[in-house]
Length: 276
Image 1 (cartoon, helix red, strand yellow):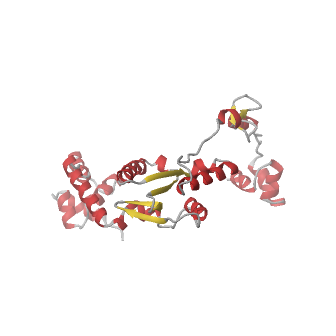
Image 2 (cartoon, rainbow, N blue to C red; image 1 turned 120 degrees about the horizontal axis):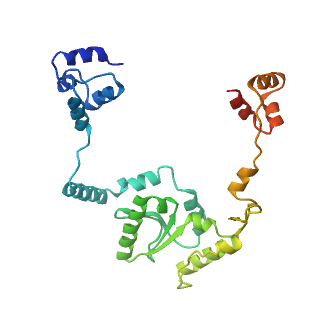
Image 3 (tube, one colour; image 1 turned 90 degrees about the vertical axis):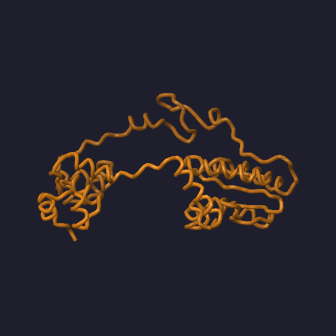
């Protein structure tokens, strides 16, 4: 139900303040501030409007207060590890595809526990009898600063408590060729089963030599599966000369949007946009 701002304005103009309006008209500071921005309500002076907008600004917390809040939240999460925000958000839709992928590979190869909770942290794959933690990292573990900082604290906590950490970046693993993937998994299993003392790492060849070639037009560096760079592709794109709107309407009536689109080398949706 919309408010009657005319009556509210009249009440305010009759020698009342905006505080009286908030109190007697059941309006919040935020609502009144929005009404001023939209021009639904006018204050008697700019100073009153500024005073109201200042009232809505969130109060800045001191470093001491922030520290107290941080300690309180950390204590609460340690007592209730199941309420850790990352855990709730990350597994709200079930395991990710990379986790299911490695779960299928690891099954029957060695004993492990899924999502082992240690203090504020959980482990994707935990080999408890050997204290080996295998973490499958998505791109968010590199792009999201909060997750990066959390991973640093998590690594420090695990190392301090005697855990050996193996992190597998999914995007890096995907870039490996089939044979390289098989070799990596074999080395990983040998390391876990104490058949090798070398912790496996994902290694790449120099992409600048084998995986990149030159653009056929400008000579710039492009990926080996391409022919031209993006700039040259745009230059080669055929520019379609559009007919007039009347001509288009006539052709569409005689045939269809798709038929006209085929004639000009575009889609039926493009013809529909041209008509607009």
